[in-house]
Image (cartoon, rainbow, N blue to C red):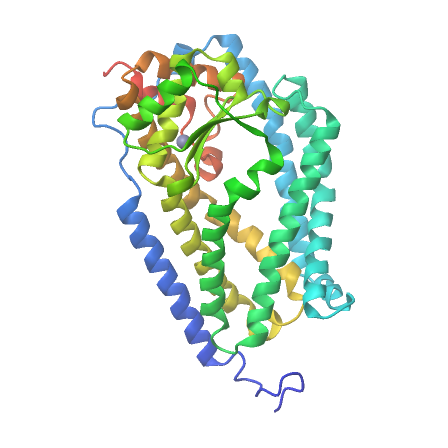
Length: 415
Ligand SMILES: [Zn+2]
């Protein structure tokens, strides 16, 4: 039978040809991901003979442990509560007939798609807003943030706008490709999405970071010289050392190296520059430079691009081209991507924790200063009220970094 919409033959649309191509695309992306991860991820980052993590009681006072656990308890209630509501709502919108409302939106298909994305994103943000407010209130009450509510609201609006814009772009692309190509849309969309991950990773430090922070060059002096010296020792070329005005919204300490190749900058939070002795700042900077040395951002970007290509191919198999051509697919795709990203979280974070451990090991080698490493790890944990012993399953699922006790095992006495 002729399909009145595009004149194609029913059955041929989602026929075995399209399915085979989608299966091949998924298999190719999966094999490339596994090979890349097997070769480039440091699966055994710990030096041989590293002792097990010390007890929390050996590192922190009982009062410090109690305070961090009390903070973490409520942070988890608000964090997990918000996630549960987000998942429940996006599944309710995506997996039921409600999603068909999207096809009643005005305008041509791409306007409908963009409006549907905006509507779903706004609903999700509104539904989870009470949890976000409670979490921010919790941070304020515990001194982890001093950001006024107006600034916080501005950040929420900015991140909602960024999420809406990027998701709308992505969905218009996916739907547009499904409308354009009958069998090739899955591999084309997989390649396009993988490419977008690469572009986003390159553009993020230039486009998104300035929306949230202002940067100024670190003034000439001992700290700047020390940063450039350790960079040279680790064999990393650095174009500039910048300070971000992160203290406007957080009291936590951080630094990162951003940019690939020609635009590499070491960025220090002003909290780190202003309140930490230089040897401890250098322990943090050396860790970030170790990431740069191993091109960890590039490895993460390649793995992310392959993961994105894989997820598009699976999407093609689950949804099929015919449904993919209409705006009503938007809530369904958003639900599948949300569930999929949660399912992928242990893989992503398992890789991340190993890369972080390697950066710690190499930072210690570069600075030769286990005392500063130990002190800064203790202080980072205290300042962020990090739970030294989070539930194992939650750490396995969502923990992007080793726990403070796992990190301190690197400088424990060898047993
Ligand atoms: Zn790191």
